Length: 305
Ligand code: 13P
Ligand code: SF4
Image (cartoon, rainbow, N blue to C red; front, side):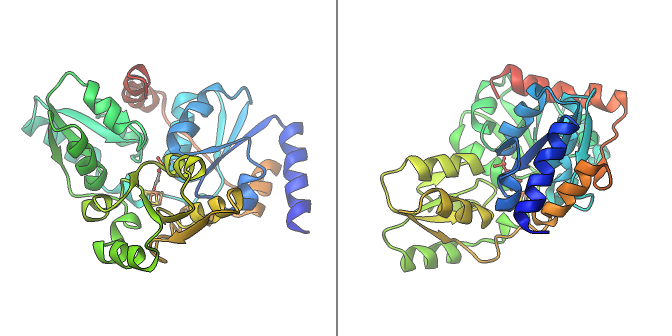
């Protein structure tokens, strides 16, 4: 079968079976083309709530599929690639957070959405990379325990100096592998380019950037900008997608190693198999987990996140 034939069959099956396909922007182009909604994890979590379909296929990583299930427990939610985890989401466990809460009882626990549903059950509020600054600013408590990404946490702390933000040692192994040297080399090689980076990058990298934002934030910035050249400091697929969208502009990679193997584990044929009811993994969460984990998502939504 050609790519086009597989895509046509997916489109036919999703209509026939009332399926909604969500794809994170890090997915391959042929998957984005057949998705009903694409975007960053914030946009996808909101879409999940409004999509009218009975079944949702999440082309992304496990915590994203769990978020869809939490927000729409009545829907059948399929993770297109069962091996697609996010190492950051699994770095901390519930017991450790419970111990930290005992040690710091007057701290509000802010969880990046890149956490398991289980971990969210013991957190106070959830944030995404696009809503973190805005939400932390609005919290009543001055004392914040930010988990699990110390780079995103440090970025928020810089933007919200009035808060006392405690960080834990965790983060995205893909973005955290980029160093100041990579940024300096890329800037030297492309002196006319703006550097756009994800806040999961280290502070030594974000402080050299012209723009810091979520995957959608980076894409929107580059699309709207009058500038013609950009160095992209997030998963390399974003540079590729932008190059198709803006053929008159130039997009360079900040580092060749910015590749998320988990995000890339979904293939178009995996999506086809999920539509046939043959592949993927149905996300199952207990009623209790959904009820407790949803509390911190509800606070995020109430605060405009
Ligand atoms: P976004 O919130 O920008 O989609 O980021 C999710 C992610 O996993 C980035 O590595
Ligand atoms: Fe997780 Fe990093 Fe991959 Fe994003 S890029 S899904 S944070 S491992």
